[in-house]
Amino acid sequence: MTPPLRIGFVGGGFITRFHLRSLLQVRDCTVTAVASRTRDSAEEAAALARELGVGSAARAHDSTADLAADPEVDAVWICARNDTRIETGRALLEGARRRPAAAPLRGVAVEKPLARTLGEALEFAALLEELGAPVGYLEDMLFAPHLVRGKEVAWRRGAGVAGRPYLARAAEEHAGPHSKWFWQPEVAGGGVLLDMMCHSLEAARWLLTEPGAPRDSLEPVAVQATTACLKWSQPEYAALLRERYGPEVDWERRPAEDFAHAVVRWRTADGREVVSETTSSWCYVGAGLRHTFDLLGPEYALSVDLADTGARVFFSREVRGEAGEDLVEKQNAEQGLMPISPDEPAHYGYSGENRCFVRAFLEGRAPEPGLGAGLDVMRLLMACYRSAETGAVTDPHDADLVGYHPTFRPRT
Image (cartoon, rainbow, N blue to C red; front, side, top):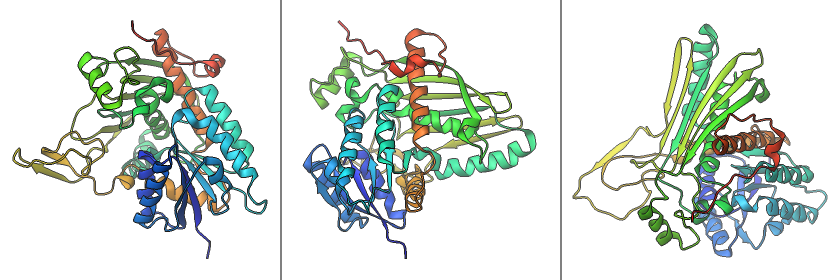
């Protein structure tokens, strides 16, 4: 019997908790360690792993280097803040050098986005490659059951008869993130475009790619994007953010973008043009998230709405309770007609991606999507920011994107 893959998490916040819950549906793995920016955060995540039964021996570490050096850790899931990626890569290398030679790390999985800029992403990728372990890029949307099944049917029955699809749309919108650092452009690297359009760009590309074909069979050739700050820089909402997170978050004077729209033109291997259209925002207020996908071909169309969870409950105004997200992620109300998600980690693809990554690392290979996918997404994100800043169509292969930093100018 194959011993389970022993996983250590770097970061103990929201996304780590999603991964921990997803592991209830993943075989051949166990959580043994957590390191985070604070000891309390690491302890809380380790306690959750023990409580869920996905890591009976999970314990907190004081540093990423100590976690990487621990011989009880086989693979590392990086779920830390965007601004810590390079220091995390260096710490992994430091810890890996302290491991027994007979027990090298067997894999590293990195949450989206890969970093804050393309230059940082390339430096981080070089550190990970120096480790010598297989590396995967965590993009849960590629494993969401509705999308996986929808793509399979659209390509087999639609494209198989009428021809390949030529337009993919993806939109992900909600009322804003939970943690303070997302609202600090210098820490996060941007606003909603960097935080959420990374999902939509990659999901749209994947939908347009023929099943079984390599990712470079679809080449991005032009990017046109728009960003705006529609809600959270308004005085009353900026004041709400300051009250919630403190003076370090000031969207009246230091905003990022809370809305983004991008159109990418792609070239297929046989020279045809296809298009993706993506929208992301922190301005949407509804029962939960707005999370939609479309794939259009000559004589067919696929439509997926991940906000349609298959179960709903109605609460009259007489039913009052504390605010929370016990029904669905990004829940904005506790009354009215509300969606219920029976299993959010599975619904959004976390369970599927972690099954894929665990199996790949146990077999000694890199999972798909790999590190190159994360770099491709970062290049597109920077092209989006450059296009929005200049108002011009941007070539995603422009060498200047490596040194490009999105501009977030304080308001006077």
